[in-house]
Amino acid sequence: MRIAVIDHFGNRGGSSRVIAALLPAIKASQPDCDLVFFGNKAAIKRENLEEIFLNHNIQVEYLSNTKIVILKILSSNLYQKIRSKFTSKFSKNTFSFIKWVSIKPPFSLTREIRKRTEDFDLLFFPWPFHLDWIETSVPSVAIFHDFNHKYYFSGGHTFSQSYRDEADANIYSWLRNCTPIVSSKFIKQELLKFYPEIDKDINVIHLPQLTLKKKISADDVKHTLEKLGVANPYVLCPTHLVSHKNLGPLLSAIHYLDTKHIQVSLVLTGAGTETLTGCANKIGLELSSGKNNVQGLGYVSSFDIDCLISGAECVINPSLYEAGNGPGVDAWSFGVPVAMSAIPAFEENIEVLDVRAQLFDPRSPIDIATKIEFILSNPQSIQKDVMYSKAAMERNDWGDVARKYINVFESTADKHN
Image (tube, rainbow, N blue to C red; front, side, top):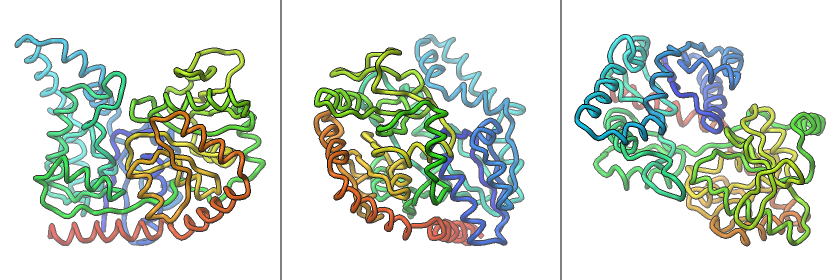
């Protein structure tokens, strides 16, 4: 089977780590499968995907950078906010014309993808958002990660109303025309709740660890911490600066620990977090360059995040809405304690992967602090949980996941034929 894998957006973080682990596993499970990865050149370079894929005999092709830039601008929240400010008929027609031009040659990314993939047996979209459905005769499979555009959490809207409307229309088109995969039963329920008209099988394939490393050496951890200027002891939160990641209560929890003279700092990674260095207090974070107990590193490489996870006292995820705990699965596989929100997808991780973690109320700084304190103060019992979880993760490998994906690919192609 000849499969085109299309990742036009090249998300930072978990999405890229999934692709980097999944495609080599598919190739290893079915060596005669011809995989060609079409992606965003900047993201491919950033995540070192070309080297990873070529080492596994996976061909890499670049999509047009200019078309991707146009698509990202038109999909950005800033553009949508600007657009929503203009309500006259002339303005609406102008924005409609801009949209129309963007989907016409020579600016259409969807047309480029269709033309470059028409001789494949299957198209696989690991992240089909911010992209119109591609009218193609080739059968397609897509991963639907979550539907957080259907919620409001706090602060400013993550997505504008016009973006949410367009996203819904696009998702309906994708779901009607492709075979959907989700990574948890919770997201399957969400999909059926928000898009009940979709009458087809929803494939649930849970994910194992996202890291490509089996083990990180103490020397690698030491050198990485020195390079990044991180001092022990610290707890780690890989995140993004969007409202559902719920950083406010975590910052207050660090302040609460400080008032109890529990010396531990919080390290944040992810795009934009380089602006979040300061001293945690009851209401959030006082931005400073003096005596700080919160350190934002910004977006770091996959190797660096593996080292940061391995050196942490615990990995903490206070998110309100997710398909699963991406940082958590890596922490469990490296033998690092995990503290996380008591939300459905994370509780499903515990059930399906058979791992252990400290669960907390994500809206309660006191509860978050209490669970961190418990991890720091009970090394013997925590070590038992850590070893139990590490052994469990060794039973959940990418080989099994790859075979499930291959089954979906083959079933989709057979039905199409």
